[in-house]
Each structure stands twice: as C-alpha cells, then as structure tokens.
Amino acid sequence: MEELRQKYIAAIAAATDEAALEALRVQAVGKKGEVSLKMRELGKMTPEERQVAGPALNALKDEINLALTAKKVGLADVALDARLRAEWLDVTLPSRPVRRGSIHPISQVTEEVTAIFADMGFAVAEGPQVEDDWHNFDSLNIPGHHPARAEMDTFYMSRKEGDNRPPHVLRTHTSPVQIRSMLKQGAPIRIICPGRVYRCDYDQTHTPMFHQVEGLALGKDISMANLKWVLEEFFSAFFGTEVQTRFRASHFPFTEPSAEVDIQCSWEGGTVKVGEGNDWLEVLGSGMVHPKVLEAGGIDPNEWQGFAFGIGIDRLAMLKYGIPDLRAFFDSDLRWLRHYGFSPLDMPSIHGGINR
Ligand code: PHE
Image (cartoon, rainbow, N blue to C red; front, side, top):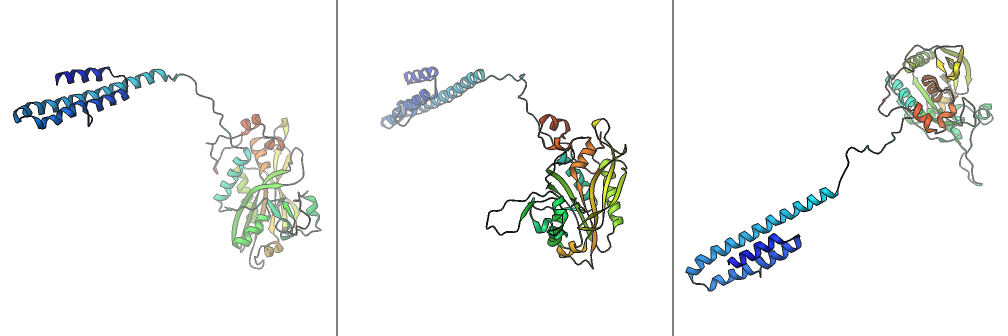
C-alpha cells in the first residue's frame, strides 16, 4: 500500500497538465484503478485483516483524491499566471479618439420652437413631404390657374404615362398639414407642424429645401389680436429679448386678412444680428384662416374661426445664431457643423440660451 501511495503521490506531483492528472485519476481510483481493485480484495480477507486494510485503503483513496484536487488548482494558477504575463495592457496609453457628432442648428431651433409653442398649448402635427396637389394647393384656395402655383416654383413628381393618380409635388409649404389636421381632428384645434418644404430657388437666403413650422389655432372667437400676441410672445421667448417686429399687410390665398412679419436686424460685418440695424428679415406669413380653407378641412366657417402662420425655421436659426449664409446649412461641411453645431447635452428649453 505504501508503494502505491508513493507511486501516485510522486506521479501527481510531476504531472504537467490536466489530461495527465485525469489519466492518473483513472489509473489509481477509477472503477478499475489500482486502489479500487485492492478494495475489492477486502472481501477475501479475514475480518481481522479487513479491519486494518479497510480504513487504510480508504485513507489512501482520500489522500490521492486530495492530491489530485490540489494539483489541479495548482495547474490552473500556473496557467492564469502565464496568461497574465502574456496578456499585457498599457493603461497609460491614450484611448482612441472618438469624434462626437453635433446637433445641427436646424434640429436645435426646431426643438426650441416646439418647446415654446408647446408651453402655449400647441401640439405637434406632421404630414408627408410628397403631397398631392389638392392638399398642397386646391384645398388651400389655390386653384389650378392661380399665380401662386407658379410663384412657388414647385417641384412636381414625374408620372409615368397612364398613371392617373392625382399629380404629386414636393410640398412647397407646411400649410397642407393644416388641412390634414382639420380633417383628422376637427375644431377646436391648436397645433404646430414643423418640417421640410421644397421650392426651386437658390441664393444667399434661399435653398431648394428648407424648413417651416406651421401654426394653426381655431376656436369660437380666436382673432388677429391673438395671433399678434402669440407671435410676439414667441419671438421674445425665442430670442430671449424683446424683438422689434413689423407686421405688413399682405396676401395669401388661404388667409384673409393676411400679414407678413419681419424682424429687425443688421447685416453689418457679414454677420446678421437681431434687434439692431436698419434691415428687416421676413420670417413668416400669417393671417386669419380663409372660410374656404375651413370648409376644405371639413369645418363650418360660421361656427369656427382662427389664425394660421408659417415661420421659416432656417431664417430663425440664421438670426438667433448669427449665421450669414443659408446655403451653408446644407453643405455638410464638417468644419461648419463643428462650429455651429450644438452639444447633444445642450437640451433646448423655453428658456434656452440667448444668442451670442
Ligand atoms: N404657407 C405660407 C408660405 O409658405 C405661409 C403662411 C402660412 C401664410 C399660414 C399664412 C398662413 O409662404
């Protein structure tokens, strides 16, 4: 028995991997292992012999098992040690640079505008950018022959021969969302509709795609005075200061009476500044919703009335953040985006920062 003990304890100590250990385990204490076979011989012994050999064999089996476990742990430690030495990491190295993107001024301003109007009880509504000509024109009291269709420099969607769906356009303004919202939810209503619009036009203050936010408020006695208050309230919240506005009598087919609104600004030194100088920048069209438009929206003009407006979001962004050229908004020039973009953590609120 002592021979067996020495043989296996020495072999276990010399084993260099887990496979060798397992082979030793089978050879010694496995079902047909040497120690196990010896235990079978206990049956043939006299009771006296058995009393001595039995506990001794059990003790040997335990000792071998213990040695196996201890060696296994030892081997794992050695393996881990070797791995730790091989896998080396220099924690003092600078990390890989990650370029953080920025929020585009248009997105930022859209959020700011939405926050201000939400505070005044306006919900956000949306409509498609590819619009049929009824929603974009006819329903807004702009019939086929009307000069406003030509003035708007409309992009028409091409149609295959034989396609007899109504003509579709890239919406030239957000006003069709007025109609869609009226048809969907009726009156009373108080909504704004921010989104992209398209006109074939290109210079320092015009791009073929730009952004508007439409406003619509209908009730029993909503008036032009409410319109003026809402807009002035909006401008002072948006610019964080009282802003000179100029309401000019104007004409839109879908409002009567109509007014265009300009904001006082200066273009001196190549940057535009609000609230100073002798220039005016037109930022919105507005008026009392025309009875025919209410009718097209399924609303009785004898019962309901209210105002609508359409603000140029890009113009507002130029004015608030001193951006002189509208075209740069859509050039995707990274240097420009990094300069004028906003941090994702700079959450807009109705108290959102005053310009400059
Ligand atoms: N839709 C007009 C435009 O794009 C703006 C407007 C909207 C005017 C609502 C009056 C009322 O110029």
